[in-house]
Length: 521
Image 1 (cartoon, one colour):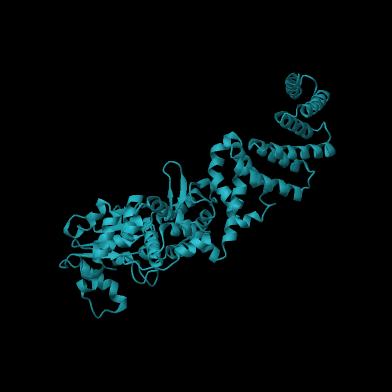
Image 2 (tube, rainbow, N blue to C red):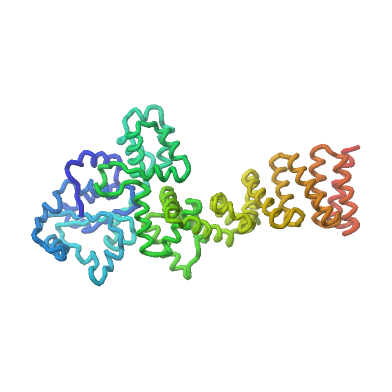
């Protein structure tokens, strides 16, 4: 139970104006005067979005709980019962009781052998009302039924007002672009904005300088967001840094359920946006999946796109969780789990799978860039190959080039330079170079591929014939018509000998040869 002191009134009123709370929230401020209003209301949202500030803004007109009750000489074990009895008394004056950070559903709803559930000690009186602030929506519903106020993510306008009240006016002169970029980096989160403003003020630095810090390596950003700072809208003993507040909540999740913490760790290893639920490790039953995702949504760690089933992890939660895993030496273990899962389910590049592999691509690209996965060339070579093929089908040749180079080099190292699979990877990289307009590099690879094919497989092998066709077409496009004709004539001769003059491959090669001969004449 906590109330605000009048010393904070001015600051809280500024917060009130900046946050522009929903009309339904303002009605809570009038609850003690409304006979038929709800007796209990829960304010629910992610840590750091302003729940405590909202509760304090509603509470500051009232005297403190201790002054109102005046209960003395109580034994600690009798305190909850005495408060309940006092506030439930019909003759009691109007009161407002606030339970801030009510997050432990077991403590509130189940209790233990030695400590009954806290819900059993809630007073009931038409003269009084109770507000809970919580990050657990499931608990909010159990405590306040339908009277749950979910605080939405802050938008740019609201975030701008918070920043304007935290920095001198000179920071906003002709710096609209910098302000917008800064707020986007901070995900419009009030706690992160307050922390950034405190750091900027203390170090007399420009907005662009702070943005540059946010764009540093992940570890440096975490260090920046772990800075302590003073904030009059939060309690004195609270740990203020953005990263620290989520570490604490993540530890609470771990104590509740292993699968929830596993899912959160898993999602922190991949892209935080648009995560298909089919990508998550599947539990024994669908109900368990729904319960697990539901708890993470209840704690506002994730949200779900209506109608699409795609999950998104809050950007700063993603960052904090990754750093938490690194500090606990769990990141390597979890990034390998996520990559193994991708290796298991990533589809081929066929058009029928297009929608699915387009959803998986951002996550695959992120994990394949991790240093822990870069070292695992052999283990994840086929994942790289499938991802590269999908990027190629999508026309993203620059993105697929690096993956295909890795695939080719790994095949050469493991299988040897003359293995048919290695030859295929050489030809695939040549095709990428051609689509990038890098014909000379493509020609060099195709020449190497054909040389090895002729040496190991012979001209009449299908792979050698394909390599012959590809290099001939490259030479023709480069104006090397005589060399192109020589190769194509060999290809037509081999196809005729092996498959007959009427075979489709023979006919297509003969048609290309005739066309080139006419061009030469």
